[in-house]
Structure formats: structure tokens, C-alpha cells
Length: 102
Image 1 (cartoon, helix red, strand yellow):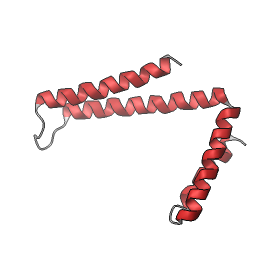
Image 2 (tube, helix red, strand yellow):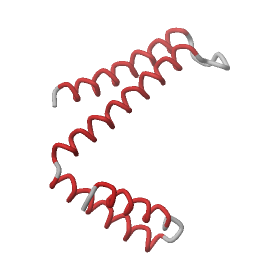
Image 3 (spheres, one colour):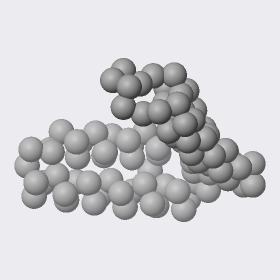
């Protein structure tokens, strides 16, 4: 089964979201197909996971900058904003390190 066929199974499941019995059956089928695809294509699966992590790192860095630069109601002190920024950047750096260690 190709990755596109696996994606189609997930889309099919998503279209059934309003019908829980059918949705969970279809979702289970899609997850099983994805697990099989990953087992059959480990290099492609690893690359896909790296790309997913890169997107997560970029999102965390975006949120870190937003935490540092934006406090509309003044609820957070400058120190709290800095702490939020530092925590998000630390998490982003840790995730990025997992990519480099693969």
C-alpha cells in the first residue's frame, strides 16, 4: 500500500466523523495501514517523522516569540513573558536535538 492510499484511508475516516461506529472502524483501519506502511518503508517513515518534528520546532519558536512580544491585557510581567519564552525555546531545542541524533 502506498502512502497516498494510507492518506486516503485517513480522509475517508475523517468524512465519517459524525458516525462514531463507522468513524472508529475506519480510523483503526487507517492506523493499521499506516503502521504497516512504516514497517515496510522505514527510511521514508523516518524522513516523514523528521519533517513533522521540524514543523513542531518552527511552531514552538513562533509561539516563543509571540509569548515574548505580546501580552494584550498586561496579565504577565516581563519576567513571566521571558520565562514562557525560555521554556518554549528549550522545548524547541530539545525537539531539534532529536532530529540531529537520528
